[in-house]
Length: 120
Image 1 (tube, rainbow, N blue to C red):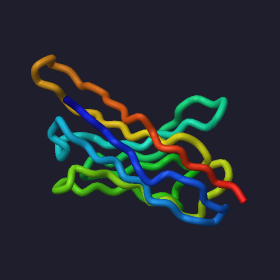
Image 2 (image 1 turned 45 degrees about the horizontal axis):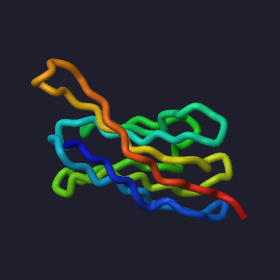
Image 3 (image 1 turned 45 degrees about the vertical axis):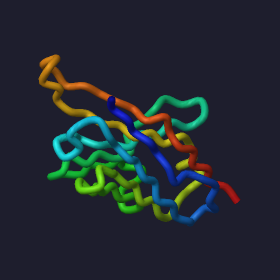
Image 4 (image 1 turned 135 degrees about the vertical axis):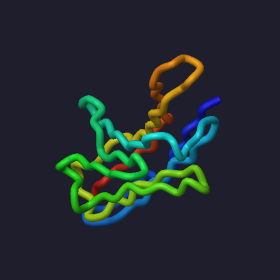
């Protein structure tokens, strides 16, 4: 059973930092593309960052401030968030994409999310 469990959210002042973690289980983590998405109140969910193992990509709004990394030995993906802004507020979701051979297609799983609030 695939599980993605996020942690590390909380309340932080503008300019501060947080580190989110996502512990994964139930699939071959090292073969998956891991991403962080976020959803602000009243807005659609948006892609923040992706780590495929060989490459990383970021939304323009977080480039230079956020860093996605992964530890394949610990089956964990991280999102280091620096210089946080109020517009970074939202629920942050961990996402895993990988090929599932028994169904012959790529599959997509989500964590339940962790709330990040940037406010003074």
